[in-house]
Image (cartoon, rainbow, N blue to C red; front, side, top):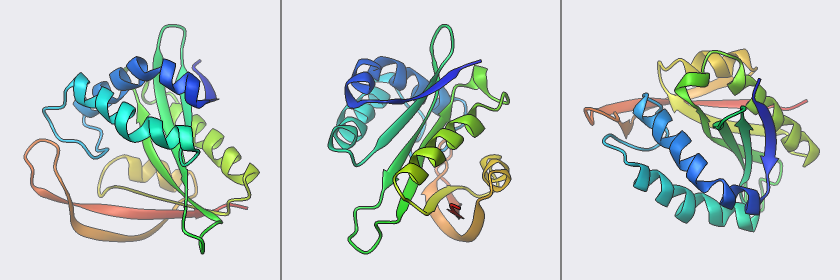
Length: 174
């Protein structure tokens, strides 16, 4: 069973090749996490290096990763809000599970670690969005997230570039 742990910025930096391979595999398998096909391993590496790593180093992002006996197979990030009037809130971003590790409860375990961290930080509200109609909606509902609404024409389909809707979710942490 994969082990889930929070990665420090230095651990994340050391894991950049693994994180890039995970993201590449997930996007190639249909994950809608802001990228379109074709999506190269170089693009995945650049995203982790240029977008995620600075946020991890500054504390604006918190990364949880899951590793099995051979590889990194999942991750998710917590992004605490930076607005002065929202110190109680955070976004959930980049929940990725490698295609070979799906349907084994890993996403649930990653989200549990993320929620534990959020509670430890005194956060009481989590928000996220996902592709309307995607299986992730079922996952999030099962984890106690509530649908807040849908935004039409929010993003381009990763293959045919047609405009797709996103569903917004929230969860009040007890």
